Image (cartoon, rainbow, N blue to C red; front, side, top):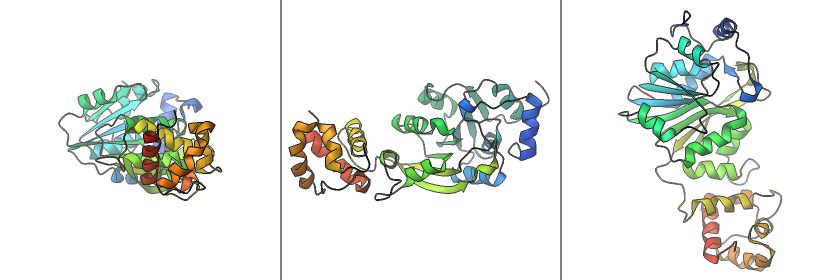
Length: 298
């Protein structure tokens, strides 16, 4: 192992980041959405939002060269960082050589057995949170995997594209509110922590980012009989945003069943002329239940 960059030297600074990149001759892969954060204040805000202490663990996805990993190791009892790019593994092991509470896992988080990994790495800790700077291109698949697998997480604190974060936190009635808003808020309570300008990354992305904190609910926000059916119903209502709920649902249940939709919607207190973006989670749950009870779609 080459002489490491010790934890006493902060990784997440412009100079240190450039030094590490130069030392290892690292080149960025656009296909992996690699952008390294170089702002100490933002790193502090991310770690603070996760509410970690020495009794808790942090699962990091896409650690890059370890700027956030280093900060997490100073706060959490244990950190597991999952990195897909095998070129970064030796860099991480060097940079984090004096942080014994960090485990670096080489792999694709979308293919890993996360329950098994968490059980192995975080046994005996009082809680675990995901803390990460996620690549834009794979943000939604990663978050939905974390939520749908019902992992035993306290919080998910991630830096993602600003517009995506705003959609996750959006309330009914606005243009940002959609199926992603419903899916995230079904499982979590979202909170926008801060906006992150594109200028605090190497290389700089084309758009600004945001840090969002998702606090996992003890149970979903609404009670549904069939989660998969509930989410299919939500997606159907947003299939074409400018169309009314009745028109979108016609495509979902089939034209022969169109005449059933008006009475069904009115029976649960939803005006058929409304659009999907105006419905609350409770109304989507009622709609899902009514469609399921009516055997629609057939």
